[in-house]
Image (cartoon, rainbow, N blue to C red):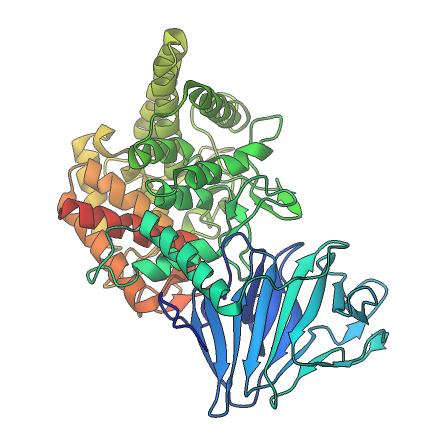
Length: 567
């Protein structure tokens, strides 16, 4: 008997099949921009590594829902579900399957070894790339093993026949564990995964309905990309993707935290704090965190004061004093990094050292000079310092509150006095002081200051933003710019974080109609094109990594806000 799982259907070429808490996924995507013919069991420990290849009958059609993946043809079907974060269950009825090592060659430093375990008669694949074992236990039926104990280049795997029913469990683990016991029926596992996903999406998008047709799929992208603590990942973490962008970058995490805030408050809190667990002695956040590495070669922008304000508002919870103190101290160190280590002598404004520091890696703002005082950085820092002043007052530290208020005023005055020309914001070389304007959307990001911007400045920014607004949303480079590149990363495509920040700033600055339009177009874009890392501003096609969580979060934030405004 096959259960009828609920939830959205999706293409595994776009979105991997995974489970909340798991470091595994099933997908044909085996490397950056690389799709295999067959689905693979992919592990995200130590990077992104295809470990096992699943080869079904020829011409089998793949169907995926949150709790069940299946291949089926006119003869039968193979089904896959999760029995917890580190275990898959597979079964076949009238259809066979070949499970083989993804790497054809075993060397002393790479590849996969296969042996049959005399302890429990299971078959175990060991992977140099992940540093883990993958045990296949045949629960019903029989399997023919190929290439056990083979070295060098050889076929290694199991063949499960089509002429009899079969079921297999595959576990990822470190060195040893008890023999696998199938104490839960396959259909019950599907039902349990279904219930877990349904509870998650009900928590993060209780407002969903016919007017928000992408909400459940957005919820699945977040649910399935969340991993359990392991390695340098100190908390439950929503990775940016379970494709090749399988990290937590130190501004991406904020948007996921906000999408989770109202319904999964504790998980949202973990998202906010995770990069702060790796602050360096200077107070800087890492560029990124993943299972086996923490990178500090770049930083990301100080969006965290803005995010903390939003997080509190969206969660609606009372924050314990101890947590307020922790947030205050962590934001203080992060802010002091920018003030003490990223301001050149005699300068009032901090600078980026490369476009990567801004998160807008190759925006045209950085074309002539990489080390610049940028308007978005100053505006975000003002917001963060204002947040610190509010927290200090809340913690009964009036002297510190006054000091932070003074710093916010100083940086705001410098932003408006040194980078505002009367018609636009410019960037300025941190070394020479030479100013340069660009056509990048980055130069308009001070709209994030919202109601604290002078009305005339906000109106000018709103007018300039309209030039970036395409049929599908805000292009990072205008369509008529000579620098616009359709798949140019931050030189043309539409991105979720810029959209969310600008929509919020416009709304708080009183430009509500434009904010509504920005929101509407981005939501329609996601409903048509999914949750890609970014989108072609001319066609709306999804680009790069196609299962990106901050895009899903951006949709949930804008769609949920729209539903609430409509009552």
